[in-house]
Image 1 (tube, rainbow, N blue to C red):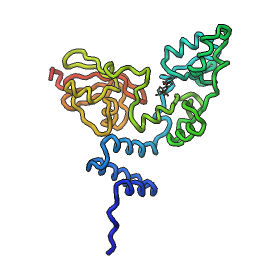
Image 2: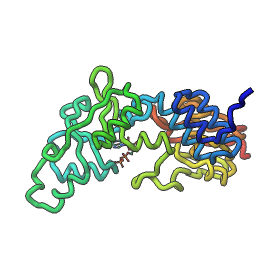
Image 3: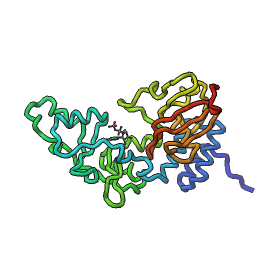
Image 4: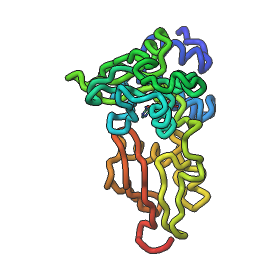
Length: 275
Ligand code: ADP
C-alpha cells in the first residue's frame, strides 16, 4: 500500500484552504495549536479569519444609536468642535434625519479652515465627501475587498428599507482578525478596571484577562484577551444588559451593552461574601 507522505503543517493547511474544507481546516488549526505547532495567538488569528467567512456587516458595525453624526449646514468652526468632542476622525453628515446621510466629514479636511479666517463662515457641506453605502447583509470579506478597491475606510450601513443602520470602518474588520485595537482616543487600559472595594469591581468590556488575574479574578482563554470577549464566548452571543454569569467563584453582571460589545460589567464574589 502506498502511504501519503508525512506533510508539514503549512502544506496541510494550504491544501485544506484550497479545498474550502473549513471544518477540517478549523480542526487542523485547533490541533496544531494544542500541539504547539502554532503559537496560541497565531492559532486564534487563523481561526478568526475562518470565522470572518460567515460574518455580515451587521455583525461588526457600530449601531446607529452609537454613531456620532453631524447635521448638514453646520458651520465649519462648530463642526470642528463636534468632531473633536466625538473623538472620531470621520463623521457622517445627515440632512433632516439620520436616515438621510448625505456625506462624511473628515477631520483632516477641517484643518485648512482652522488657519484660514475667510473659511470660518463656510459650512461642512462644502468639504464633506460622498458617502459609501453598504447593505447590512453584505459579507464582511466582500466589504474588505471593496474598502481596498475604493481606497475607502468607512461605510454607512443601510437596513433593508434604506434607513441608516450604523457605520462600519476598516478597523471593525481588522478587529475581527487581530482582536481589539487600542485607538489613539480609546481609554487607557488601567481605566477599564474600576476598583469599588477589595472584592467589588466595575469593568469595561475591554478589561484584559491578564489584568483581572492580578486582582484574583482568574479566567484563562487561548481565544480571547478581554472580559467582554470571554463573556461573549461563554454565552455564544454578545450578552445583553442584565445577563449574569458565575465563573471561577465570581458573579459577573452585564450592566451596559450594545448589540456589538459589552460596555460595563459589575463583578462581586459569587456567594455575595468577600472571597
Ligand atoms: P476613528 O479612529 O475615527 O474612531 P476607526 O476607523 O479607527 O475610526 O474606528 C474605530 C471605531 O470607532 C470603530 O468601531 C468604528 O466603527 C467607530 N467609529 C468610527 N467613526 C465613528 C463615528 N463617527 N461615530 C461612532 N463610531 C465611529
